[in-house]
Length: 259
Length: 248
Ligand SMILES: Nc1ncnc2c1ncn2[C@@H]1O[C@H](COP(=O)(O)OP(=O)(O)OP(=O)(O)O)[C@@H](O)[C@H]1O
Ligand SMILES: [Mg+2]
Image (cartoon, rainbow over all chains, first blue to last red; front, side, top):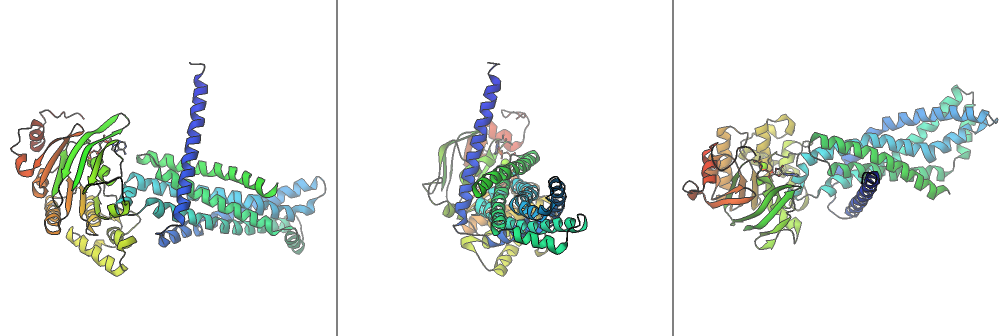
């Protein structure tokens, strides 16, 4: 018995994980199906768009700026080993748009948005506001989850596009001021090498990550345990699961797009 | 008419309801009394479908509440939650007018606001609170806003979970009168939970006492004082000694 108990615990964990994946998939299906059925709540949608999109701009922009700069330094140092310093503009651009823009942008949004959605909806759950919505003939899923998920799915690609531009600009600034690139040549190099699919694939990733982030925030918020502790646990679970799902989805999408 | 038959509900090993039978005739006021934690709030939530009973049936006018059109079912209800459950991101008037600004009962904003202010007046709150946020109100004021929200769309069936808890005696009187008025003048069916015996006498047509997961006693409010049931007697006279244990 005692010999097998670690195995039993492992099995229980695996079953638990599968069960919650199933519940999340059902929840996602419900959210998507409600997206196409009235009533819709445009005011809640606009509010979510501003909260998720507009107010995430500074943090996504700053993350991209520093990442683009660091990337330029790294590529330069790495490229110098085989005298390929000239690839800096191209690699910074491709690295930002395909990979780092969407992933880091998605992670920053996960930190900012998944947590706040989970905390807000979780608090509504423990203070019976969600029950109150039901008694006021309002479907909480439609009213709370659908606008947020839609807003995040639309807003994160825009954030990624802004992040891409700022990241490339960060690379350019470091390239010109620290690595002695010619400014015009750097930009020309960037534009020549960058293909539209590099950018578009990153934006699609961004949309997927935005969907996942808001979905996790809503799911964990609505399934929050009781009391302040329950809300705390829901918030943590939302951020962790959103981040892990972003990495997993990123791998799958990269596999799908580029192999 | 609302009818509960053999309703049971457990949370894990906590067997809260063990077969509740209760009938609330249409247009009457039922008051549920009983010790703290005996499952009064859970009973109301079962009727509304917020909590799913483990077994038993609940019908409204003969129709099983778990079947049929849920939107149409909920459209007849108003509920005052024990904790208020106000939407803290919205102003007071928007809370009260929530139902009037969305869905089937949608009204123009100015009209919705006007109705909200009128409902606030009926629970003893002036128009100056309309633009505040719930967090800016005292506990008793929040409770009354929540009450105003419950009655805003003039529902036919209203549940009040401890409407007068936390209110001063005068406000309690105002709220008792309001509930009585809603039942007698508007013909609504009301189900009220309260610990306040003066409220019971002011509001109730019928009284039911919940104890041990079952309805221990039920009858017209006039019979309540005359009953020999020791549980009811202990409860309405607030005695520490009696069959109801004080450690629960
Ligand atoms: N969602 C829930 N999960 C687990 N247990 C619950 C839940 N809701 C209620 N309970 C339990 O059910 C029991 C009855 O709760 P309920 O809120 O109905 O009591 P009550 O009769 O309304 O008491 P009070 O007069 O203090 O409001 C309590 O023991 C409570 O812990
Ligand atoms: Mg209660």
